[in-house]
Amino acid sequence: MSDLPDFRTSRLSDYFNYLYSTNITIMAAGALTMLPDFSLSPRIDQVGAEERASRFTKRSIKKESKMNGLKLVLNMIDLTTLEGKDTDGKVKQLCYKAMHPHDAVPGIPTVAAICVYPSMVKVAKKALGDSGIRVASVATAFPSGQAPKDVKIRDTKYAVNEGADEVDMVISRGKFHAGEYNFVFDEIAAIKEACGEARLKVILETGELGTFDKVRRASDIAMHAGADFIKTSTGKIQPAATMPVTLVMLEAIRDFYYKTGKMIGMKPAGGISKSKLALHYLVMLKEVLGEAWMNNEWFRFGASSLANDVLMQIVKEQTGVYQSANYFSVD
Image (cartoon, rainbow, N blue to C red; front, side):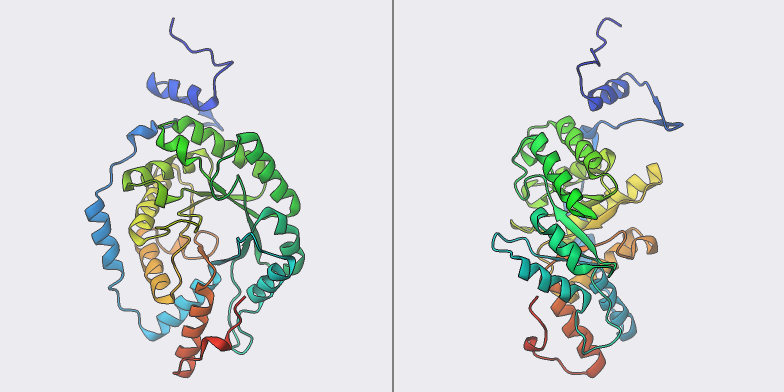
């Protein structure tokens, strides 16, 4: 083979792509594995995806199911503060809110996690103690992702060393749009390695990807590169999470599971502030991925204001009347 690349100086994904293009399979962990050509990710029927997503909003949810759904939504929230003005005091108060969403109503579950900047991880970890609520940290030059890979790796390792249970990274959207899919793959794989035991959520920033085809391709790259979750958005640009985009990502997760047997989590983030919309997301989750994903191990909402709306709806279901927003802590 005179055209054999010099693999001593090439990236691992280049090697995989060479094997794929020459129809050679490789042995990994005792099984045959092959990295797909990401340029061949399935095309998405945008009209069909939008119409199907809209049908999930027309399901009727009865009283008992609604109450169970509201509690499940609350338990799936990553309660988030990602502002330049964040202080130790604000993060501590948010952690208290996470552990005590509304003490006036018994039987209210806690949220799934607190999501903060790496510099606030230690504060959140100490405040949450042994509550079982996880600490998630954004990393990799969030939200732009515009930093060299070594900086992103150090950012990730810092968050993990501070105590982060989960890391939310952003992909390099510029490289993705330039068609440098190997670069995006390698970077995600490097961050996954830097995470150690922490779970990795890969933020696609779908509002910057432009088309459903690109959302599907980015989802495929992230999952093959080692993501534990794929996530729609940083919440810093519009549009953020939408039901059609989330549907495309859920279907990518389903197809990946059918091919590999590996479950991947999903996190829509940004733009979900009402409990009614959150319940529509749960209906879609159940119908696309099934019961196994209906817990906070595999599905999260990235939100800051959703929790209070869910609490207001829970009180309404129990008492028959709405309480003023003033009865619920802001954070």
